[in-house]
Length: 212
Image 1 (tube, rainbow, N blue to C red):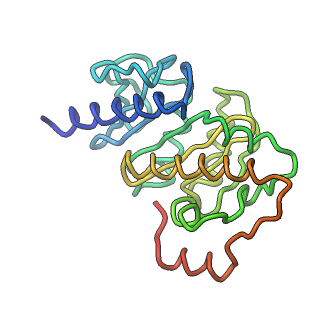
Image 2 (image 1 turned 90 degrees about the horizontal axis):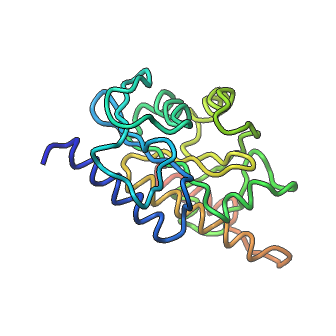
């Protein structure tokens, strides 16, 4: 099996896993992975649980469609992340329930949305900035994402959902799932006194574990 064929199968398997575990729903969310100088992306309007490896959109570095079905209308989010994060190989954008719920709260810190509740959140996400709201498909969102992506591999789009880049599809998936789990914990703990990790504990984790 060629590398491209393997990546196509891996992307579709991940999409199915995310859908079956209710981390995405309907035709929401999109996944991409670098493939040499080009990249593969889920097509527009596609259900992540029913992806066809042969119909994935293949795009060049300028987002021109080389083969497959028309790409997700949010392809510019992925391109912005790749352009700002040359070392990353995959990008995942979901409308996962708890992360979206956090993104609509009024009293969150836009510079760092979620507190350091667990070591794995710090290790896999670190700092999570909030990107201001733009309508789906608005190209201004790409510029807003570029403003953060050079410094952060994980972003939360206001009233929309998370975008996470990683060194591979599995790394990006691990990170976005950790983000969703932490968002769920954050919501469950609302109104309770919480013992977060201390600044010293966070600094130690960041020094020991590099982010994607």
